[in-house]
Image (cartoon, rainbow, N blue to C red; front, side):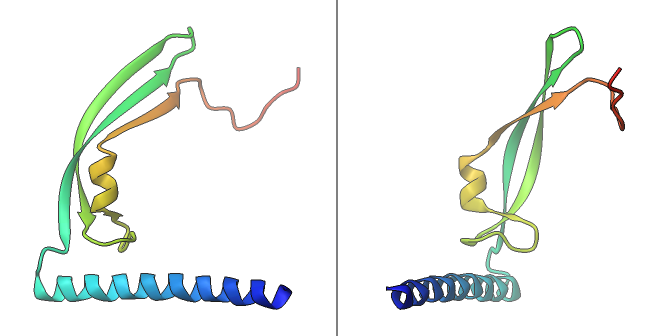
Amino acid sequence: MRKYIKYALASALLLAATAWTADWLILRHKIAQSAGAYGEYEVHYRFAVHLKNRRIEQRSEKATIECVHSLFPHYDEAPCWYLSRHTDQLQELNGAPWHFFYDDE
């Protein structure tokens, strides 16, 4: 039984590595041929800043993000299929002052 589990795990790992390598090689070929390897999406960022007086201040901004037409992220770029589904992104921020140490007083 243990032998089959090791075989299945090794096969899954080899399949994942092969898929990532094939995706990278296809992307390299698209870049070399200038065949639309990159794309752009407009992403709407919304920031919710939690203030000291327990209020929430909201800010928003738009940014054009570059992405790659591939299955996996490469070259520090997100895949376009992911960005097309996540164009609205929310980030919550804490507006309290920074404390590098805490006193237990």
